[in-house]
Amino acid sequence: MRAKLEILWEDENLLAVNKPAGLFSIPGRQKGDAVRDLLAKLLPPGTELRILHRLDRDTSGVLLLARTLPAQQALSRQFRERTIEKTYLAIVRGYVDEPEGLIDVPIAPHAQDSTRMRVAGRKGLPSQTEWQVLEQWPGIALLRCRPRTGRQHQVRVHLAHRGWPLLVDGIYGSATEFLLSTVKTGYRPSGRHAERPLIDRLTLHAESISFTHPHTGLRQTVTAPLPKDFRAALAQLRKL
Image 1 (spheres, one colour):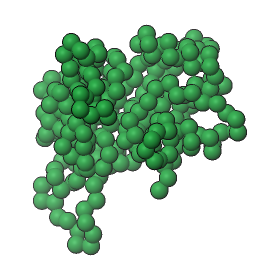
Image 2 (cartoon, helix red, strand yellow; image 1 turned 30 degrees about the horizontal axis):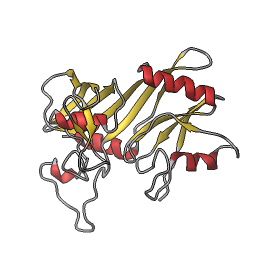
Image 3 (cartoon, one colour; image 1 turned 135 degrees about the vertical axis):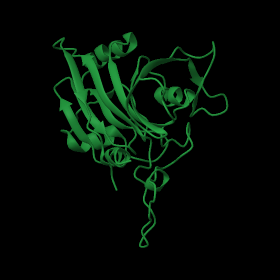
């Protein structure tokens, strides 16, 4: 099944989409559709798009692209100066014993695996993630995270470091899917088919991005609604 791409907001300078999980931000060596590939089929021929930031393949949510070189340069400067604000929603494992906090731990590439990151000492890049508890259940919590820096896998690495890995994360956590039977007391499986996971990708959603518009100078916020699998997981957790 091919991923569907929703355009959240656009003008002559910028375009924001709700990237579904399973879709690459940019084309890579691995096979699979990328955001620009699908947008090329939705927009007029010859439309030029420039990626400003990335989301992991299995992270859903808002992704911002520039339609002109000046817009790209202006937004890239805002990313460097850390005036762009992003929020993520994360379903994590573990009990979070404080309502909010800041994770301030350097991050560096993993020494043996170039596709992973790790918490590092003085050799790591400064990395900060604010977090806030939105909801909590036995052994599981919903957090809103605001990364102050933009390191690869930052939210995933920081949360795992605190003992709160994503509910589904095969690299920095321990599970590749979330089954209702693991949390529901007295769960009775169907005799007709095997249990299907409520969600089988990273339980991380890029909720919003706020920036200063390069043409108007006004502050702009774009928010991405939760996808079906994320909503389904939360709906079942709220029934506990």
